[in-house]
Image (tube, rainbow, N blue to C red; front, side, top):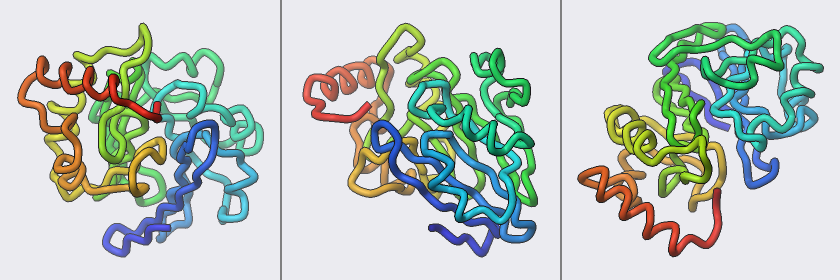
Amino acid sequence: KLMNPETDFSIRSFLGGYDNNFTYLITCSRTGTHAIVDAAIDTNEITHYLRSDPVAILITHGHGDHTAFLDKYVQQYPGATILGHPDSKLKEKYSNFKKVDNNQEFIIGEMRFKCIHTPGHYFDSICYQISPVLFTGDTMFVGRTGRIKGKYSSIEDLYDSIYNKILKIPGSIKIYPGHDYGDKPNITLKENILNSPLLSANSLDEFKKRMNDYEKNRKNGS
């Protein structure tokens, strides 16, 4: 659990799901208001830590491992709003879905969030910033970027999202990823750049080459 006295919120991480997934519970220290990032973990793991029902579920992207328990969350917390990308397919299923646009800011309790669209790993990928923290989903992990796996992925979009958006953020921000794939659960952006060749390419072509090299030597991860 991270307590942040400067910004008056706390983060509790839950590890499990289908592939070392993270779900995060964010609590406003002033109001007690809760928000959840991704529905990868059963609600039973989280209930004990709730002062009240969460008011929002922030979805980093639509892959099934990150939304696996979303039906249960909606059933158990019917007043919660699901936040996600404007093109997310979740809007067709959930009446309480609300789109968040790129660079849109919103407040939960007294916590101010900023939404950053980061397509690449998946077309509807979003990072959520609550300074000094960035929830990156599968766009960035500890030690590397996300992968490009299917027709809704794009290496050009991923490069743009990483190099023209995330890497423009101050290096002191701490990355909270969607999976526990690194040697620790979270990391500062500055440290992550130093640890990963995928985060220090000089061009799109070089990024493609480094990504190709990574795939050839990959042992695990999504």
